[in-house]
Image 1 (cartoon, rainbow, N blue to C red):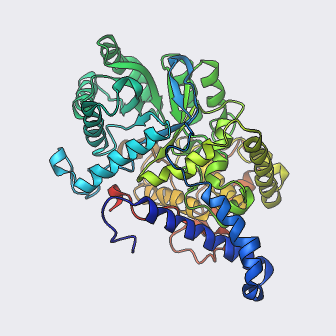
Image 2: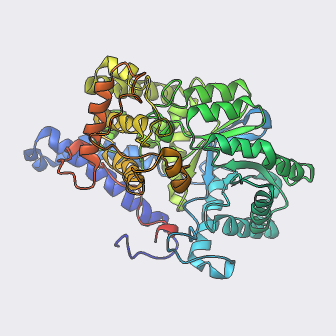
Image 3: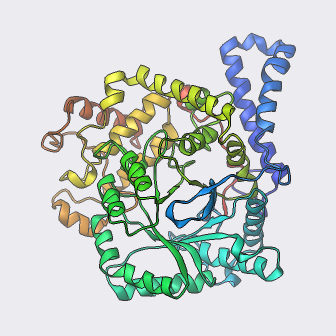
Length: 519
């Protein structure tokens, strides 16, 4: 059934048939390309050497509730909470974002029955796998509204006990205490729960956001804590590493939600002092904070739609989702939990399959071997010196007068050539292109900043001829930086005539149909 027209509650069987068919098609195609099209007539080889092992691997990703497996739990830093290593995220299961022309959802009367039934099914599937942490935000459209209604119905029926769950919501800091108090009241009224276990300041992306929080917003949150409505306080960020480190060092927060993945740190990639959020991970552990990884399967390389090159590098015994999950869980400064942006119950399949490898000799061996191959591919593509040093001295968009997102664009060039992450890089660079189209080059950075108000997705695309010499003064190889940006722009710009290599194209797409908020 066409992706655009399929309606109703998602079917496990239908979803899994679609996903497995796409994976098998990729494996058969890859095998035929390696052996030659003439081998298509060799049915015994096709069945025994290609389809049978592929089926065995992919059948293991079918996560069956009641199979005896429960998602492992770990201590979530100084909160003391026993946190599942997977979190059920709430930004792809709601009916509407309530913005961008979407039909607004203000009350449960506006919610389609199929959408709410799907959300309840997701919660039940999550709990069946032992994933009892549910995350939402005031900024996720109708997510708080629908999550709250679903959870209350399960509490009222006796199917679920509130004390068995960990619920997190997030609210944005505001410039005035009045505005922040208002958004807190809206969030708690909409969610409709007596308390939340975790409350994060959503979008601590700029230094002034931290100033707002410490200046007046935290006082309001402390009132909620004193009233028993908030248990633990953290922050969620798309900021640069220096801002994140400053927030961590205040010791005012119990946990942090941030980007950190094998391929990079999303908007913080290339950022000082160490080229991404590694020092933030280290500092969070030093302060005994809980560590929550944002969007590892999307912002970590669009791993539900991975490139053929990356899929082959981490495979065949791991898929990209399992690889990044294990990388985060088994890191020197490990993630305590990583969020799954769940749109349908079957979305748990690949993530739960990864969790089954957590803290096992086999999982550790497969991770080490796959990581070695991925690093070797990067070194082969860009050279050892560039792999070791590409990020040194790179400015972020906030440090360049015309807002060029130097660190981010150079990172995207690395993602392209090291691992073929074309679809991911294209989507990320489109944001920079859009930002550039709204930038007035006749005005200063400060004047533009007041208008564009960058936060979650900052930075401008590369423009040929702009003098960046002063901004690149600390780079060991400024000429190569310019070359990398020029190359990435030529590949990723909207009118590019670049011929995408086959191994940069998507191996498969694990989204059988559109999530409700994207319809």
